[in-house]
Length: 168
Image 1 (cartoon, rainbow, N blue to C red):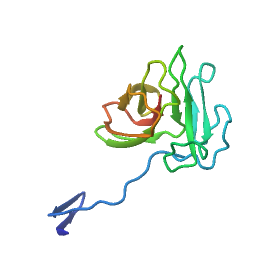
Image 2: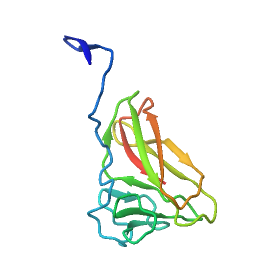
Image 3: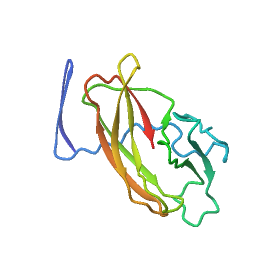
Image 4: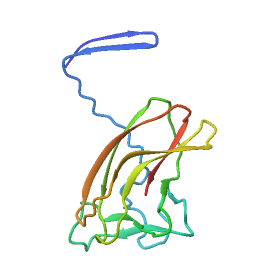
């Protein structure tokens, strides 16, 4: 229920008792992996492997798995004892300082051996697309073979003009 809208040049003021915003833009390209061929090393549509010589990622067909999340395919990152498996979205997303991005992600581990963490966030770039810094929306060290939903938000810092979504 919107009580009043006041539109002036450059300003929109909404006074409301209840406001339901139902349109959010999904910034993740190919987030379901449904159109990708399974078991092809380092080839997932719209995603790149920052360390292809030291790590592997691919799409798996999970239709025969006992613990599914509703999708028939999933992206898999093979853990590496030498360095991170850094997988990023190919597309640069233009952002501005102070933008706040909300993320949801489901993860599971193939097994619970070893140590390590799962991190979802961004790689920050300057307005000229030079690497600036890393940002984290959420991270966990919890190992589980069950699909687990994580969420978090990320506020774009000063000096950043573009981001790439990143999972490691």
